[in-house]
Length: 259
Image (cartoon, rainbow, N blue to C red; front, side, top):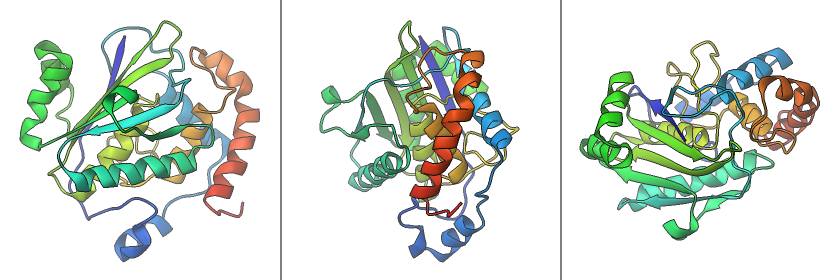
């Protein structure tokens, strides 16, 4: 049972993870302009849209919560040591900002449940065929011409068992970092894109290059222990108010928002 997320990223100014943007004035300025205050309705609406459904799915129901219920270990397969170093920092950044998510790099593919394949842009099409087969690769290309993509396999309990992320390494820093954040996060469960929420990277019209405040709310909601794999919309709505209250405290603390 597979679900796939695609991303087409427009070229732009170089962007770097949150821990480094202070060194780049243009990016620091973008982050200062980031919207950081959201109503409960803003957050809940976005969460329900990205946590249910799928931008492109191959099989199985998409009306349930999908997430890892085990520690997440990420292995980067490729020859670019600089991109591997950036990915390592991104994983550490996600680990820092999502309270109940145990995520870290793995030393080998055998120890990982998330495989990040680092490829040249000219090899992207061939890599998609290797991962998903010729027919599905044509369907993916027909749906959206991606710069990167991710997919995961879940069991009958809607627990994610394995994820694959494909990233191009030679399209510039902005595209790499934007894709790496979006696809790695989507590989953890929030696989649906929506054009109706303007603050999330899970919107094909939005390119961030860093883990924004709004998306931190969404991932912290998803990985709160009270939100379980397999839950329906109705079940999630019952616990969301209490979960969101705790998530607000955490996101404010970890980002020094002073709310």
